[in-house]
Image 1 (cartoon, one colour):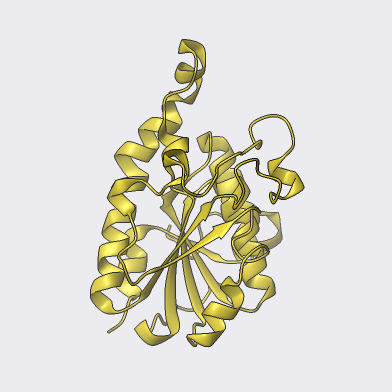
Image 2 (cartoon, rainbow, N blue to C red):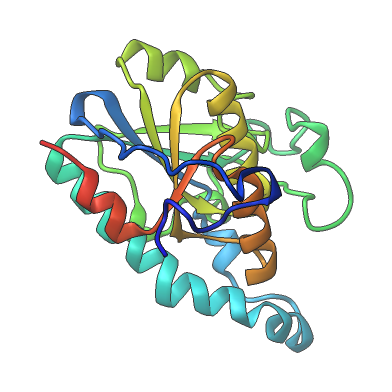
Length: 223
């Protein structure tokens, strides 16, 4: 068992194993999506905190520490580290997409300068790193990220962050549609539940991306 055979959906149960990726530093970028203060803040009630506790634990014990390792390795090897965060440009959020205006969990009013909208301190961008602001789930649809990647000659995009079944999924599909080779680092991502996380990785894998663990990805990063 390993990344070449794990996370297989019905469509790819019997497909040949993929080739090893070639992650040249000059042709690769890391995209860290939406690891923002608002998502790690306590909920408004004891019941909601209990319901979200498995997510909080995965973020603190697995996702954030692993993202720190991944970002550090990419920086050391000269791979572009790019950050995306949900942040509206207006205080009332009138510039948001419809998906962020609907009632419920996805209702997100995060003015760009508010503390809740900032990336967590442990993963804060370096001064020369690109950070795109998005009012859409996809990091490409509502930004100039596609142009940025093209301008820098990027072919491979390594993806980490949250939520696997929402902004990660939307971004990965957009990247694949733009003909980027995408790797999703499964232990650098989280959904609200592990069931949602696993299901979405199976849906995405082999069609829109390759799903790997952090140690596998680190092993493929070249000078």
